[in-house]
Image (cartoon, rainbow, N blue to C red; front, side, top):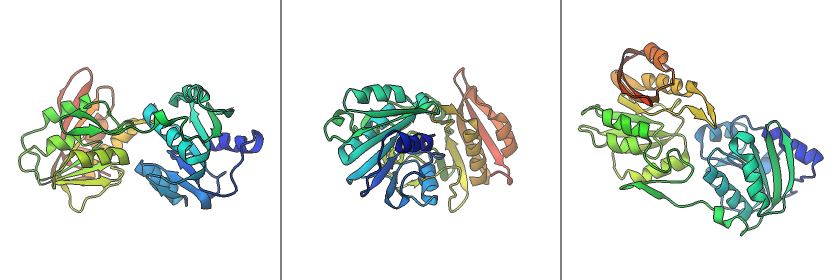
Length: 329
């Protein structure tokens, strides 16, 4: 309920919008009401492709990075602590006024306490399980929160703070990589490719000619570009649920996401399964890993004529699916 808290701050708590200059909104998510902000001066900064498209369709100027001065920056908290801190540090260095908004489940109370130690805050506005507060920008007050550079998590593989599995190889992806067969065909897609670990393993398989890395997070895909110096890798900043290749594929390999923020949404994984079936040749195959508790079997059965539970343990289950349905997607 960003819009409600922002409107209250403007109407009742003394927050004023600057009369001139850019108004930057960092990391808003679909559903955030930004109607209180002047659209002609507002710039949405987000690296998540579905959010980018959503706000662009609403008429906002959207960019993946912003390095210019701003009159005011609204920072919308994310689940990733490093990402939130980096956004606040960037906003404080660039903006006359910094506004921070978030809900309790994304750690707004802790962020409020930490910011209070560094700046003279106004607010907070408490509403709808969240808080909004603001302070004057300062180029040095949050300098130690600035974004950190790439970190090496395995030989030749680097990540950035805030991306999925930034501290190391995801165990589910590692389990799937070990289960892959000796051959997958020529043209393969890694849906939700992240920083490229699974694709790096796919490229080692005999006969691979193309691996499509389809990833919605801009920073994660930037890591993948650094990690995979291979002409066979093709990079797509896209929502995997909507991406379409020029020709149908021999195989799809994926460890699909199942969270939006802190909320578990198994429908995301189901949408990935439907997308995989739509992308495959009639002879194509899907290799997929999922957390043990996620109920994907029904969707797999409706999208594929042959589904096998290859292996699993108390944490993960790995599926191999063949004979994609023509009605999938």
